[in-house]
Image (cartoon, rainbow, N blue to C red):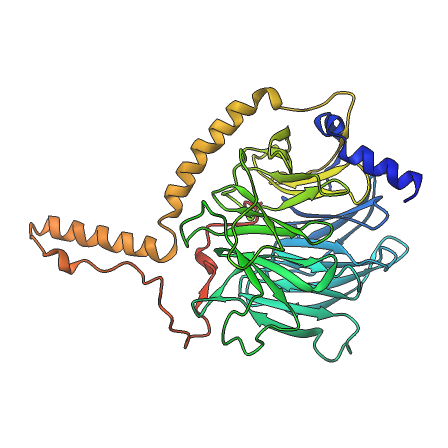
Amino acid sequence: MSGYDLFCKRVCADVNLVKRMGIYCEYEKHSGCVNSLHFNESGNLVASGSDDLQVVVYDWTKEKEVVKFLSNHSSNIFQTKFLPNSGDSHIVTSARDGQVRLAQLSSTGSCRSHKKLAQHKGPVHKISLFSDSPEELYSCGEDGNVFHIDLRLDKLASYVVSSFTVKHKSKKVGLNSVSSNPMNSVELCVVGRDPYVRIYDIRKVDTDNKEDNCMKRFRAEFVKSDYMHMTCAVYNHIGTEIVASYSNDDIYLFDTSHSNNASEIKRYTGHRNSATVKGVNFYGPECQYVVSGSDCSNVFIWDKQSTEVVNVMHGDDQGVVNVVEPHKHLPMLATSGLDNKVKLWMAHKKPQSLMANLPAIMKKNAKNRKSDREASLFDDGHLLWFLMQTLRRSHRESDDSSADSSDMMPPPDDDDDDDDDDNDVDEGGPYSRDVQCAAS
């Protein structure tokens, strides 16, 4: 390890610098909320994608826009990533329209070409790059499908090498997140519209989609309801841990070496994840911290081992921080949310910590989460069942009748194993409460 690498390792992990973070710079280049951020390999550029369908590449070291281009997506951009070893000239995007696209940039600061790599039948919130193959990536969609995409394939053929469908009790599970193991790219984890983190070996999946044959699946011990679901999960730098964020619940850390159906080893509390498909991440050269945005407009940083909050900072003017992206080798974070700004954070002579207000922030988040959780009980089929029973009750009362309780319709059968309908997707679809961002 070089002296520079050793310096960066020590600085990035220094809790005193983490506690002193403030906004180093910010840019306002979008006209909608910003759903995605990604640093290039050298770390001087950050790519952002927005509801305005634009992708902006910004050089924070010079505080200037490098390129801005229309993505050719027809709906909200959810992910933007630089392809490694491409000279920062190739950016992959995914969006609400279900497309995964590749943009090639010119040296003159414009977009030279676009092409569609894959098409899901639902929104695509996340894509994941291979650590050992710059031409390959995974995508996952609310259609329940995971695509393995290889850019080396003939452009006249499909770029999708293989695909599989995630199912639970024979029903498709709408997916929010996919992450490849940085030490073993054939292994990936996915999360979505049920309470499980699933780990797959891409070489061993059932491509006939007859059953869900994941290697392992994990579930938080305190999450009892099958209606709880996750918005994001990622591996640490060596693939030994996965951090996952539940909607209307906490963030949990899982040990990937543990057996099937194992529960968490750590739990991180205090934030609120309800209104959007919110990300979660590790921070530090050895993933010493866990970071996430929150529906209270703040950025939370927890010490991974102690699970204590070490910093909380105001990160969004519209009330929700969705994205917290760590720099690859510097003590820096990039954040974005419902406003149209991208903020870059570093240790600052004027720290912008809200730690003095942490007890009040956590108390308010807990109160609001309780309300969110109660409201979520009436999602999808249960909302329809609830409304129908209310109408029946209203009709009985207006007719002054006394119908027997046997007239009540049963609630939706969670164990319905009928898989004849291929469109039977346990993802929420158009009824999904989770949105990436408010309408802009």
